[in-house]
Image (cartoon, rainbow, N blue to C red; front, side, top):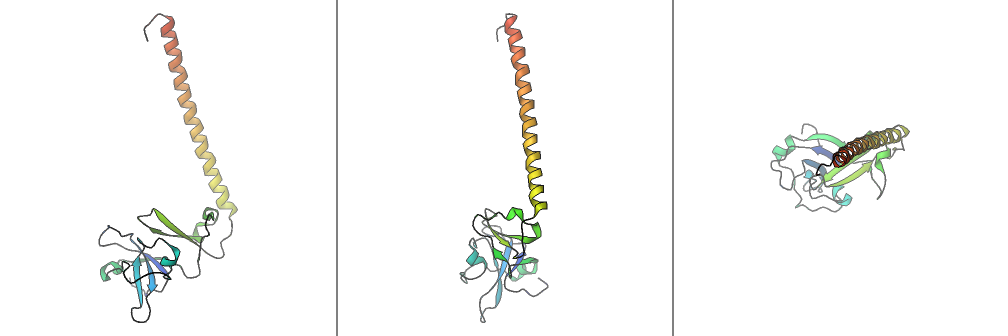
Length: 164
């Protein structure tokens, strides 16, 4: 990474292996003796670990080669963890940040403190939901029409004495 990392920086990087590696790392300050170190987020499935408050030195620290591939994504400094049950999908995308772990199966969401509900985002999501529901209705109607035609064909064949 060409620029100096600061505590809370989140980066994407090319892991040297994929077993128990996320390809995302957070910069954590391990104190004066060890300094700021990039740690892969695979095992960092809680906010206190992601922010470095409850992490141990055994966490996967990036190698120098891995750190050289790091690309800065965002900084946790100044962001707040999303509250349990908080719908982050109502905010503008540039106000919502995700730190994945466990190959993306666990996600911790962080929100910019100025984030406010966005009418544009809410309406866009609802329009997409309406379009998806409309597509399901059209698909169901097509399926129903096919079944009605097949029933009519079978009834006509049975009326003509055919063995079904």
